[in-house]
Image (cartoon, rainbow, N blue to C red; front, side, top):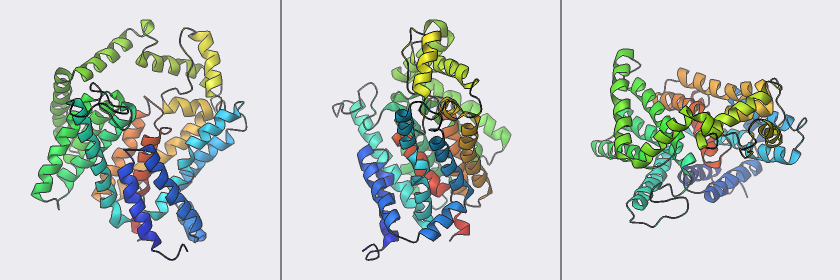
Length: 400
């Protein structure tokens, strides 16, 4: 049965559909993911598949990262929560390697275009809610119009999409003039959309992304790049600060809560700082292998009761480094960093400019935003990272 249709074309259609559904719906994305995994598992040719996976250092690093979470169940006291975390991390065992074996170089433009079409749809709906043409629905409000996901996930994904648009606008020599104008238009409207929505992590990611893009645009000429950064970044920041009430409010609130941290520990920023400080007191006593995959909630509840009993306990430190450091110690952190190291290393040696540029940006942006939340646990951002990594960091030259 599995041989009665063109399996490769089926995979490509599913991947293009996944790229489109990725920023729109959890259910739709999961349906496509399940179809891809099931087809892969029943389609045979296992020897070649496994050879391709285990001959790649990045795939091995991903599997090891997942496996450490399973091993960490051995010394965890809360097995139920540990299994919950393992379930959250399954992308690194199965989906990432599976996608890695089925993506094709000639279809990359379709994956990217499909994703950008979905982001365009999201952006249009966001503006329609903001202008009160559409009534707010799902996660969207008039003040913070992010309809298909919370601003915690939306703004980082939007920042990455803006980079892709900028990359196509300025680095794609085959782009026609009408498409150049269209891409330029959406680069501007997406950037404006970044500051009428409330995701501060994504906004930080936007400025980091823009900094990297400027260096790439000027071919890493330091003087020109720094001059452009010193002019462009502050100009965008202060323009957004003066014109977007939500951005101004979020910046002022974050600044105030950091300066007055001792009196505002219950704020969003204050809780993140408090969780990090409380977590460190546990991490330094379990530095090498951590407290176990499932013990963060219980151990944090204990230390929180001692140090900051006025604050509620949490199951998420809102910091990927803190979470991995607590659960798996230095071993876990080194394993996670190895994924990003191999991705950056791969991007620096490829001759393909698009692969090189995007391959450098993706891991760097995640390394930045993971300070503010556990972005390799959330559905949207984890799927974004795994999906784009599967073809951006694949060495097609050795395969095709």
